[in-house]
Image (cartoon, rainbow, N blue to C red; front, top):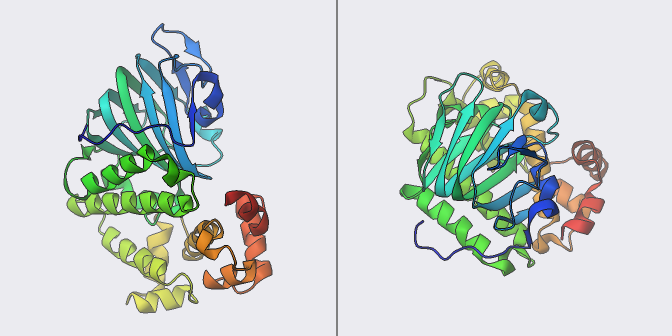
Amino acid sequence: MSGRREPGPVRSQARARDFGRALDGWGRFTGPDGLHAPPGEWIRAEGELVRGGLDRTQLDLLRVDAGLVVTRTAEHVARTPDVKHIVVVQLEGTSILTPTDDRPPVHLGPGDVSYGDPTVPYRWEFAGPLTLMMLRVPFAAFPLAPASLRPILGRPFSSHEGFARLAIGFAQDVLADVDLLSGPTAPRVVQNVVDLFATMLAGRLAETHSDDPTQPAFRRVIAHIAEHLAEPLSLPQVARAVEMSPRYVQSLFQLRGMTVSGWIRQRRLEVARQTLADPAWADADIARVAAAHGFADHSHFTRAFRSAYGETPSQWRSHAG
């Protein structure tokens, strides 16, 4: 540990069966007795999960005093409706994550940070007692695409050096302050954590030698998109701004299983969704929020929002504040 105060309860301190749904899709849990238990029952009375988050973005603190094995199969992956970026910080104790895609095991010790791929089945062995901090963020809510992070996938780095020390220290302070995650600024605080973790991973990418020569160009394109989300954006406009051909820009996204228009739409929706929960925008009507985030009109924004999240912007805003 870095000497920071121990994080206290945030929003809710859940035990055993109380947070079973928070663990759905993780996999099969085997406790220290070697027996399988349903999600939410594997943590004994001495274990606790302290959570803080906004909707689908979650910042969790996980404490376990006994050994544990989690086995996530292809069936578990298929049953997970909302796939997210996962950043794990091993604060105390040790764990070993073994992917099933022929990559070597990932050994995590105190202070190690690891970016994980939730689409790959794995076996994760925890040696208690341990403390983990985990950030889970929807793909579209992160300014870094999953494919662009492949060079650092399963390659732990220290949380005590460089920008990582600042990002993780801030997240620990957030978890230690109940008011930050329950007050009116909670949406902004959670987004601050996400942004700091994204910068941390981007910095780690810059330090990592990659065999993919297209990564610098891709990062340049998505950085331009992020800076101009509220403006009209099309493939030709983006290509011209970054001084690349439209065909090449399109190929950068196709290599990563995406399209330019799809990426722009997802980023606009996620940023608009955060804005709808922001107290600073509480008096703005839906049409103004839509226009501020690059949507041509209110109805178009509402249709896209409902298609992505299953509810209208007004419905989301009513329970997000």
